[in-house]
Image (cartoon, rainbow, N blue to C red; front, side, top):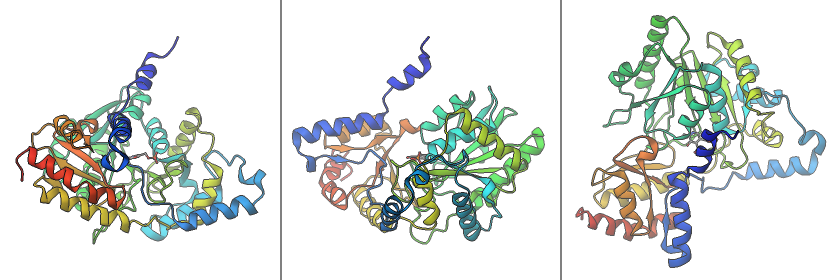
Length: 396
Ligand code: PLP
């Protein structure tokens, strides 16, 4: 019999997709340049030329049988070593190739990691607002999602709320910094406190509790901010990385899981990750892309473009009188709904051809998310529409 839960999942369309489709219809009616689609987080900066050159060289010069063949399930050893070496150079972590498991992007990294550290009926804590697929991956592992709000003033961990939500059933906590959808970054102080908090809980419940750090935006950090590295503050950390955003390769599906070398069950945990990858049907990560990233550790897309976009959109939004948190990373701006209702705000914005995502899709009401990974022209040309939207609320 057909699995109804999966049918429902396949049939429920995401708000972001709906907005995107709506945008396409509007563009056909009013013109491509009259609709301002800020809904999707697809990188707008092309992948670095080193990546294109590397791919071209590999495709023309390498033996195609070897190039396109299967790698071992955990990935090509050379690639895994290149990643461990790079991480050690940057973060002094002491990782080895045997801690790295190559994946088809952060989504695969997350679903494999969650399957590895949860038992049916256990709970995983996520901080609201959060990337909606977490819930899907947690449920797929047979676990339950427990939502914990962040602090409203600065989008850090609310430790009182975390304490309330924690129980002997908690198996893991997911963090995402820089964050989708807020653009906020967890401070070193927050990560230190979180590390201490989780260590105390491990003692109290006499079991390992995992911190799953979802890091697809790790390189997208702006200004003077120095991103704190979560694995420095808690030993039982699993890093879920992806090159989708840092190298603008979301369609190529490449990333990795890194088990912290300090994890108490380092080796068994890694074997478990291999087992989860196997049972979920991930045979190996794309071979060509594994070779490409091995040769290009430290290469990043031109994030100055996003930094300029961030400044432009933040200025427009705040000059219009909207309240937004100034994002330190990723490519999202989180804007407060003047009416307090995120859907009302998103619906009203549509009247001005502005497509912005209501925050309840991320488990929190009262905001919208603006993805500013779009052309500079789109941002500049949208100013008039944002002004009209602000006027409709009496903000200007
Ligand atoms: N985690 C977060 C917070 C994201 O925003 C995304 C994609 O937008 C992902 C994970 C999935 O990324 P990937 O394309 O690497 O699967």
